[in-house]
Length: 330
Ligand code: SF4
Ligand code: SF4
Ligand code: FES
Image (tube, rainbow, N blue to C red; front, side):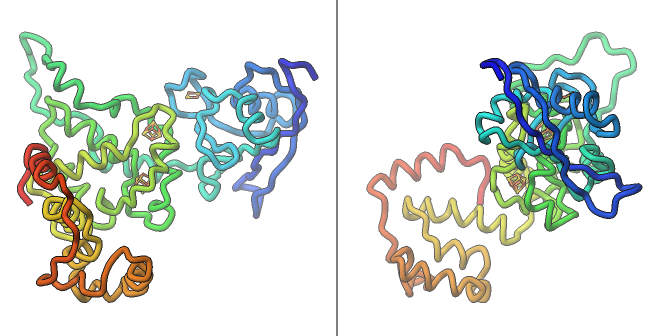
């Protein structure tokens, strides 16, 4: 073993849907060089140990999105990730798994049909009446270009989609990558289907209001696209276009602004009453009791005629900022 290489044992998830009842893990010993990528490690498992080891790869330049896998549970683009870095980070123990174990068809190859169905559902293309003989190209201002916010860089690798906890429990949810695509095409100045996409992504169960803002998608994305930022933009666009429906999530967003505008602070009890009503409060009784014990709320906070939340000393400034930055009326 030299400084530039290291002898290690790599564990890999193995499963063949045609022959195996259950998946299993297999270990492979090899010497890894300092410049080798996770994709090189997978190539060496296949070329030097077991030719049946299967995975997708194509460009080797981080642009086709085919080689997304998980290493020690963390979403990774195999052709971008240096293996030594991960060996250092995980004390020489790494396990390579598919992006979604339950969708494995053969080893790292997964059935991505749910990803593509959702991508397709948000109409990921420019919808426009095209002039058959245009006199010049469609011009775009710098300001219009800036609004894309990296959403155009998505390579559809699925890393965010298969890291999203909401998708694990709700198969109707579109997921972060579909929202990035919905945003990217709705913001395009040539497109005319913004309202259609906003209506689709406003639906309870499948739309942006079911996001729990856990940031897993932002962590997972190898192109640093930050899907949550696009989800938040879609929230605003839905309010601006009067597409947002009144539900717990939208009222929670409104209640948040209402509270900050009134006090300069968050009035936790008021937000719950505003978004879920008095009956809804009953659901949160256990949490409310814990918060009361911790002094975060008081027993009379929920009564509209009691205003005992302290006011920020800079309330005037806060109210001015809210007024300037608000793009739609609550
Ligand atoms: S922030 Fe929202 S979309 Fe992203 S992983 Fe979490 S729940 Fe899913
Ligand atoms: S947003 Fe990022 S992680 Fe999600 S599919 Fe696109 S490139 Fe992959
Ligand atoms: S092989 Fe294309 S992104 Fe990795």
